[in-house]
Image (tube, rainbow, N blue to C red; front, side, top):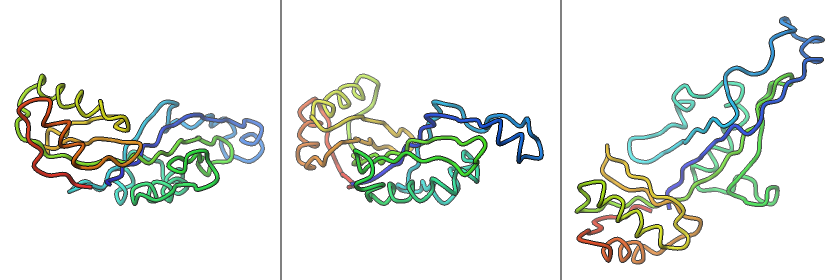
Length: 180
């Protein structure tokens, strides 16, 4: 199984009384780096490795200091917070800024990479995506045009044979390789 990590900004807080009392700029306001609803996907597959590049400049260093350990655990396929959250693939964390913290939801996304021959247009992409989504635990299908593969995200492991059968039964397609 491969793993990605999705980080979503779910809330921003502001404590003006603390800013007034302790900051050089007492009117600095809420964090202007992040916005509620921002989503960031971190990957470590093939040539892609967002983790070691601080999200390719998408993250504030103070926030990264707090969330990076959870992102790393997710990318390695580990439990992000066993026994603390209601889903060990998820964590809620916030940045270090005590006067204007940003709250993040950090999620491990488990997936397999499928290399498939015969996909050559939007109709064939839709047919393959629909076929894969008929499998109960497949939650999303994403095409990587650049590198020529499909990512099938799933809540629980699906045998490779079942993935291949779903793809090959929906048309003239052949699964040539599955990376777990």
